[in-house]
Length: 116
Image 1 (cartoon, one colour):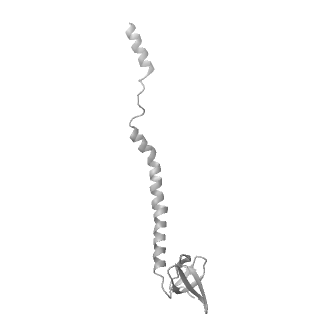
Image 2: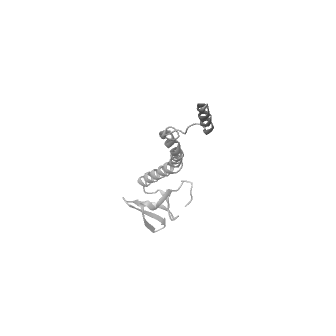
Image 3: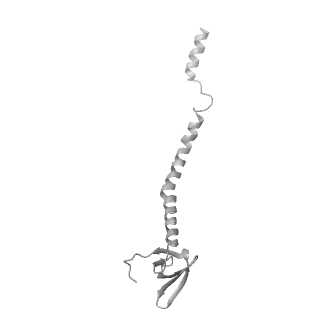
């Protein structure tokens, strides 16, 4: 009779708590880091990679500058390349008006359909 009393009170308490946490600690670590990893991957493909591609295209454009190219500077000045040096570019902006710029200040080549 005493044994029956102990067993019924043990059922009333519910199952015994597990020792060692809630399962595999590696899986819980992966589950907690997964959103962070997904955010990093999204940032890489939407922000970092396209920016690197634009920077590479800009470097190639600067390396391929030649006399006669129509360009736009970062300040919005339209000109024609008169001479190219390793670090500088001389632009002709009007008759008898030539300006010397850093190569990095050339923003883009003008399309051939652009008027002077």
